[in-house]
Image (cartoon, rainbow, N blue to C red):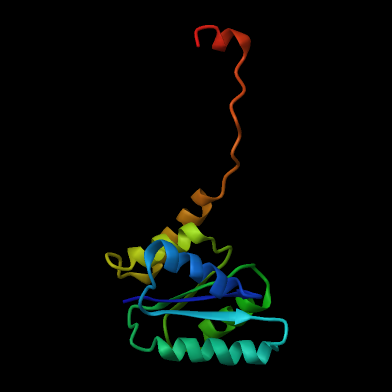
Length: 143
């Protein structure tokens, strides 16, 4: 099984996870690490290490979902992915759609790189702009 860690600024991780639970139930092998204002980067690193340790049985790898590229949760996760022995892939720009699909996709995808690629693809497809179609008078004559 592939493990999942969600981290980000403020209560990003626990907030997003509350939505995951509501929609899909609480996934297994899933940890959250919030980076609240009172935390130092050292505390963030400690908490991320603890989360990785809890997922030690995830031999297929671990995906760490972060909020912003370049922010402390992303940078700290990236550094840990290099330092640690586990196969860790760090993703950024996390949204609810990509998190739910990835979590559910672990049931049939056991390659962490394939799952990471799917997560990024889903995340991109979930970002869109809704525009109401404007019809000309000619187009609406028959309606």
